[in-house]
Length: 609
Image (cartoon, rainbow, N blue to C red; front, side, top):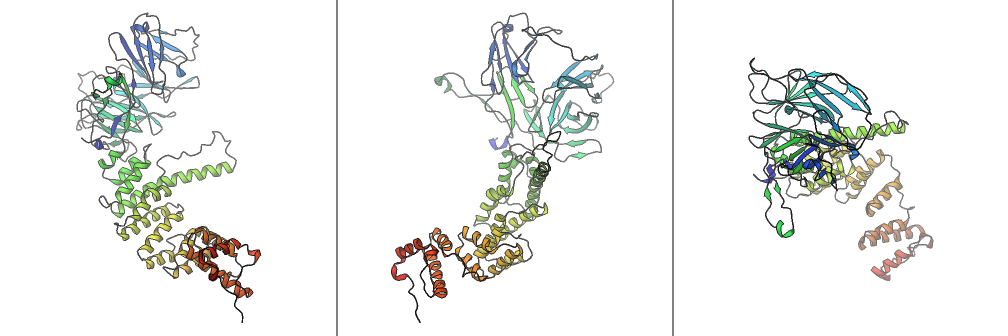
């Protein structure tokens, strides 16, 4: 299978630790994400490593028997060691204070550090779970809830195993994930993952069921808000996205895997040691090994090989595995690192080999602009609240985060539409249709269209002599009025004479000051267009010759400079009876340049009658 087929991979730089063996015991602390390698009960050393730790922590402690569990407090300030089922030892003497106690029969517990929630398993069947929530030194009891066990014959003793439960935050909400090895409905074969939503307030509710359509040994991870289910027998994994549309039966939503099952990308274990030794080829890592232990949200540990990996999702391969572009966009827009992949999908759907139909292209643009508009609205609400003096409100206002799902007009213009419009092989009708489709979508979401998109449409129309269409677009305001657009039209007068009047009409609608229009045209090096405009409104007798000559010189077009210079000589002759510039016009530099390029004889001589 080519690399482009794998959509899951182990991180490049895993945490390495001493392999588990009879002398060395390995523990993992889910709160700090640290691996403890304890040699000889700690007597010959304890090494602690985490994904972000540049320097591992090493220390020794007296061997007082087998270590059952070992952890640091947050920020590694206090060490706690458990050697018996009933005692936890703090090597440094500390006083502990009992904050709160609850009497409850507990079969097993599970703690989720990200949400500070602990789940306690109670009752004989172990399937009534009692959550507690810790916050700022207080412990709150949340409503207990029951996990529905699968239907089974009377003779079989069923109970809820800790192995089949996980807790994870998905799309900002805490869920309890239950791996049910047999469906509750007898007509359905295969295991399923049931998601219970556990809110801070209110009862826990069954929300989603992920259909696995197979049986065997499974393990769960959550990566980038996706539920990843590993299947040991087939050595493959599948991913589920609960934001994608599923089948709703009135109470729960059923989901199927987003993509076909695939293995995690093969991983090579680099050979450690001196340079001479590392020339040996890397050893392939045994994926889905029985020695793998999976922790939430995205950690896989191989104690026998001495590695801790973070599981990662690769988005680029998914582009070719999910042919439905609408569903693909829904999926990609929810991922963290999605922008460049989304832009590559847009380019791909406009390419000759993979060209999508206009309705599909419209769907993709609408999905992008829906996210873009959500962000613009949130940003506007925030700005208005700040201006209204609500910035010191309680809770404090948060500026909306611009995620990679916000693909704006400049992104689409730069990476997709501009290269697409420049492709000479593309039929121009298709190019114009796509550009207009994007503009339609922006208008539909009431997003102000940036002038450079209108410019791209106009340039494409002019390039292919579609002047009639251009006229219609302007006449029916398909292209919104703007000063840059009006200036572009003025510059097109030599190709299409009616453009001059279309431009003036637009500027009048915009109530633009005439001198401002001249400034904009000169800044865009449209010197002749500026001169034509000023003549059209009868203001050419009062304009500054120097300003126009400066602009003409900047274009480095000598013939243009000659034309502008000659125009002002003729104006001087008409107004003063002499073509020469007066000292007050400060054009000496330009006269010298004119002589240098064209010679003294090219200067106009005064006309006498």
